[in-house]
Structure formats: C-alpha cells, structure tokens
Length: 456
Image (cartoon, rainbow, N blue to C red; front, top):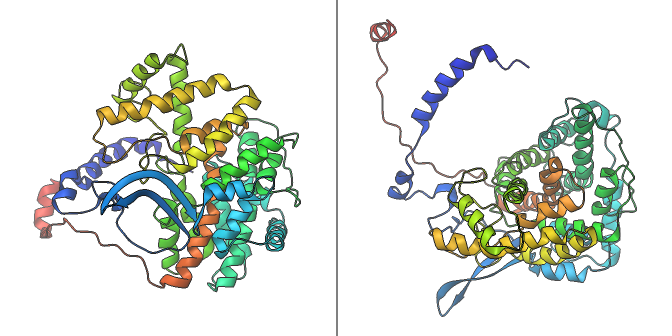
C-alpha cells in the first residue's frame, strides 16, 4: 500500500485546515446544554435505552439524597461476586456467566454441560481459514486482525443476513467459541512473520474451558496450572459485560439497530474496544508501571511513590498527560467491584509467581493515588482503582504478551455484546439516531469570477 510519502507536506498543511475548521470550543457544550460524550458535567450518563442484561451500581439514595456507595456489578440481577464464589471449584465460571447473559437464567448442570458442548462443537473454523485469512498480512495490532477475520467469516455463512433470533444466537455462540483462536492465532502469525518467533498453532481441546484453552493455545508447551486457569477464568467473567452504555456495547446496539448483520455489529464493537480510552487502558497502566519502576528506588517508600505520582499528575513525568492510569472510572465512585474481587486472585497469583515485591508497589500506588487525585482535581465522585489497574499485572504474570491484552478483553466481552445484540433485536426495533446541534452558518457560494480572482 502506498502511503503517499511524497505528499507529506500536503497532508500536514491540509491537516492544519482540518484542525482549524473542525475545532469546537468546549465552552459551547455547556453554554448550549450539550452533553459531551453523552455525560453531564457530574459524570452522569444520558439515559438512552433500557436493558435487562446487567446493572452497574455506584450510587444509592438515602433520605432522598443521592450518595456514592461501593460499586456493584449485577449480571441479570446476580452479583458477580456470587457468580464467582458459587462457581468455585468448577472449570466453567465464564461459560456459566455467558449462559446467564445470553438466556437470562442461571443454567442447571445439564444445561451448562449442553451449552459447553455446543461451544465445543462451534470452535471449528472454515477449511484453511487460519492460513488464508489470519496468517495473511499479520499485524502487530491483533484487534485489527480479529476484525478482519470476523468480517471475512461472514463470507462463509449462507445465513449472514438472517436476523431471526435463533440464527443470530447461532452466530453469536460460534463467535464466542472461536474468538480465543482468532486472538491467539493472530498473535502467533504476527510473532512469527514480523518478529521472527517460532510458529506453533495448537488446536483447542473440546474438553477444556475457554480460559484453559486460551493458555493451552498460547503457550509452546500447552501447559498451565489450575491457579493460572482459575485466575484467567475470573478475569474473563469480570470483563464479560458492563452495562449497555460502555462504548463497545453501545456500538453493538447502534449497529444492530440499523438492521446490520451479526458479523458487522461485532466487528464494529472490536473497533471500538481497541481504543486506548476503552479496552486499551490496561496497556497504559503497564507502560506507566514500567516508568514508575524506572524512577522509584524503594517500593515500600510511600513518600517517594507519592512524590513521583504527583509529577505524573502534574504532567511532568511519564507521558506528560497528567493521568494516573488505572485510577477512577466513568461510573464507579467509591470502588470498582471488579477490582475488589480481582485483587484477591491477584495476590494468590503473585505469591505463586514470586512477584510479591511488585505487589507491594501496586498496593502502595493504590493507597496513594486516590488521595493525590482527590486533593488536586475537581472530583464530583470518589476516586478508586479500576479493574484495569491490576489486569495488566495479572496478564504479565501469566506470560501473556501485551499484544493480546485487548484481544483477551474482547474474548470476554463478546458474551455481553451478543446478549445486547439479541436484546436490541427483540425489544427495540428502532434505529438509534441521537441529535447533534449544528453550528454551521449559511454561506453564499462564490461566483466563478470571484473564485478565479481568489486563485490568482
């Protein structure tokens, strides 16, 4: 592909024109009552839909007053804490959550077994798909590779455009099943062709869970411990769904509302999730932690840590954007329940991997950062660590390369996307079309003579 390198000057100059003519003052949003990002100045989301699939709780009402509270995440009314503790000892915690999200009820053991059997039967891709699609034009951006693969899969489905619930359900379950393969194989293709690494393509074992198969396909020796699989299973469950308002799920519903097919809707969701403001947040946390480790001598020195975090917040260190990544959330106030739940598993894994020293640094940052942010920023609600603060650390301990962090998020979140797509098809039946206030002023098209004069 030509990148028009000899036209670099043209794009620089015309880019300045775009920046000049497309910039809208932030003050206008408040002046005209426009909710930037569909959120008001207090961080409350604009109500745009109804859902039975999940609920995110960050506030409660006491004596008629809205107050921040410890966060809760409910899947179909069930607290995710209970889903994790209730599935303790079995291998299908994520699969049970996926069933619940898709069908609205907890499965019986026979129903869960049948669902897992259907997932196992669905993990076959078209003949030579890995060679002809995934290994063609491998990319360091595995999310792009996955998106291309999903769109290409539509060519193999004779019922692509069939929007009946049973057909959409079939398509969604097949995508849930093969997403781990699309992610892992996409990474292996990039690692081999672009980084000169060894190539190995392991088939999934139909007797294993999605978390187990992910580790099995990713590693050269296909080996993993029970704790590693359990921690990854919990990570998948916690990332499976997060309300209809998160960017990628809302994208799924917007594309679905237009009457588009499943492959297009899920590809659009992937494109949304890959953004660093959404699914790429844990990578930013890892980059920040690497920088902190380079500048902190003593991981137990809270004062030294606070001083460096203050530099980051002031835009004097790391990427100089004034953000402490992994802190705060668009919805949660006092705590992110996913982070609270996950932390216990993080601690177990850190001990097993001999990473207690790193855990000390994470714990001290978790204590210091919210205090510094609350002290120096205008905060309408509490600041607490979010799930991204620890997820990158977990993936690092599991030996998962950075390139797979966001794809792994997609492996989990497709369960939620699928549930919301089906709900949109069943309940909404109206295209999503929010209003934009135009700032365009009427212009009179110049006469030909005037344009010639301008050209001269």
